[in-house]
Image (cartoon, rainbow, N blue to C red; front, side, top):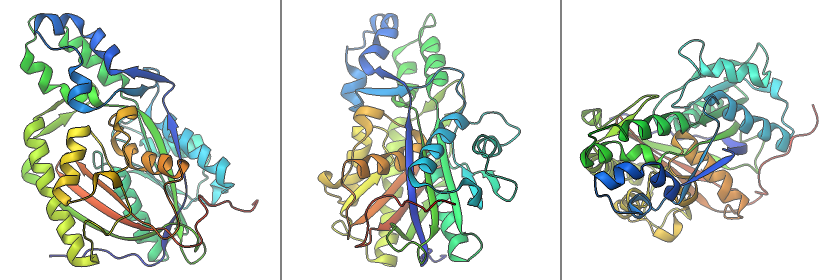
Amino acid sequence: MRRLPVFHNSAILSWAGDEGPEALSSAALEEALAPLFHSASLPSGIIEKMTGIKSRNLYPLDAPPSLMAAAAARRLFTRSGFPPEETDVLYSTSVGRDCLEPSTASIVHSRLGLGPMCSSLDLGSACLGFVDGLVLSSLQTDAGAIDYALVVAGENSRPVLESTVRRLLAPGVKTGEFFRHFATLTLGSGGAAMLVGRADRHPEAPRIKGVSTLSDPHSVDLCRGDDESMVTDSGKLLLKGVELARETFRRGEEAFGWNPDYFHLVISHQVSEVNTRRFAEALGLPWGKVFKTYPRYGNMGPAAIPFAFHLADREGLVRPGMRIALMGIGSGLACAMLELEIPKGYRGALSFPPA
């Protein structure tokens, strides 16, 4: 079995998020589905009761993923003062795509004006894409191949939500069809960006220490989605995902000395309260250490983990001396768990001198 990577010179230097301008409550979503709720005798409030999600954010129907990814990156540049032209590589990790060709990364690249020396590419791994972008950026940084990598994600769930509502309101739809598409109703929208660079140049930035990854290709058919719908076997997906997470954490225990008390804060990709609780329980992680975003933002796909880190830092929860876990499960199935070490000199996202 291959060794897990350990990083020695990689850090997250700055970060930012972007929120959709419109909040859609679970109650309003049920109101849109009122004819189905009546014909199928579905209880009122079932979406929030089953998921813990009170609302999720949306963008306009025609807003492409590159738009919110670029918006988050612009906030990062403005906040940090980082010169965009110094970006060596851009990873766009969105599930959604502006189009099949050109790459969404190239469109973000153009929106940001990163210049001709920056490489850009799409990196897709369902809801784990952003973590994988951090890992690849760290490998390149540790190798001395690059100085700065920009990882972005943008998701607009409105198209698939509206398409699913229309599908569920078609004549003759039964209760079973509602639950086959239920995971779609958890989806939220948002954008996120993180800048990865060399820790020796920026010793006060959160250090990327190591990552544990594992996959379960036998579970590839448990979730299938596109711009029109997302169909899941939620029960099996939860069961297999928890099993995979448990084994991924065990690998981290062996390689890095992880245990349930090792991390001070856990930032995980979140689908719902049930999924998040089962995930934490399987690893023995104290519920109070899990930073929760699903009640307000729902399932934001690959933007969820970096957006949650952005919120946790804004709320003062990221502090010097902490060990923080960035964890997630993506359909396919794949699992990744990344360790961050917050240095004693940490004072938040970095500010760069004028170029």
